[in-house]
Length: 136
Length: 164
Image 1 (cartoon, chains in turn orange, purple):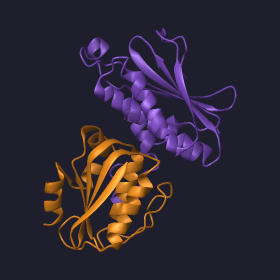
Image 2 (cartoon, chains in turn purple, orange):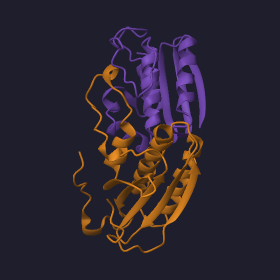
Image 3 (cartoon, each protein chain N blue to C red):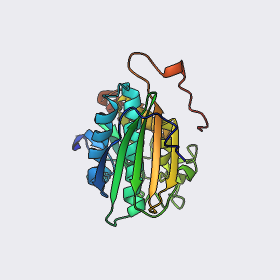
Image 4 (spheres, chains in turn cyan, purple):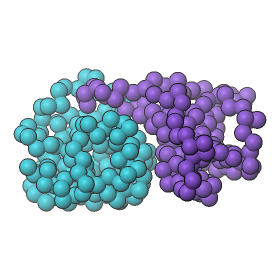
C-alpha cells in the first residue's frame, strides 16, 4: 500500500491510500494521520479511491485518525474507548467535519456500511467533493 | 460442525500454509482469489470470501498466536453449489462463531472494533463454523453459495439463514 499526503491548505491534509489496506499496514495509516495533525491539519480527507482491499484493520485506522483529530489518543481496539471523553470537543470545533472519506470503491464501501461507519463519517464520491466539504 | 460428507467434493482441497504474521495476509488473499475466481464465482462472492478469510486469519495471527510462532493453513474446498475455505491453526482453542455481535449503534467514543473482523466474516458468508481439531488446534470453515457471474445462485436464493 502507498500513502501520499498532500496539504492543500494550512489546516487541511489529504491522505491518499493506494493498494491493499490490511493488518500489516494499518498502523502506517494512523501514523500518516498523526503526522498530518502534528503538521497543523485539523481536518483530514482520507482518499480511499485507490484501495483494492480494506480489512477491518482499516476501520481501526479511520477510527483512530478521527480520535486524533479530536485531541484523543487511539488505544488498542481490544480495550475499547469507554474512558474517552466526548468526541465533540477538540481540534475541529466548528461546523466542518474533521474527517471526511473520499471515493471508496464498492468493496470498501461495503465494509464501511456493514460496520456502521457510514453513519459516523461523511463519505463523498471523490477527492474534490470531499475537500470542498472539509473546507466548508 | 462441518460434516465432511455433506458436500460431494468435486475437486480435492488445495491449500496454502503461512507462518503466523500479518505480512503473509496478502498471500492468503491472493490464494482465495486464485481459488474462487476459476470456480466461476462472481466478483461480489469472491470479494466476500477474500474478506472473510483475511479477517479470520488475521485474528488467528494477532490473537490466537499473539506474537508466538506458528502456522496457519487455508484450504479451498469446492463443491457443486458452494465454495468453502477451511482455516486450521495450532493456537489455543478459540471459537470465533461465539464472538458477540458488535454494537453498531453506539456513539463513536463508546465503540470498540475488536469484534468487527468476525462480524464481517459472519455477515459476508452463508455458513460459519468452528471445531477443535483432534490435535488441539482450531478449524474454522466459511462457506458461500456459488453465485456465478452469469446465472446467479442455484435455486435463486441468496438468503443468509440464521444471520443477524
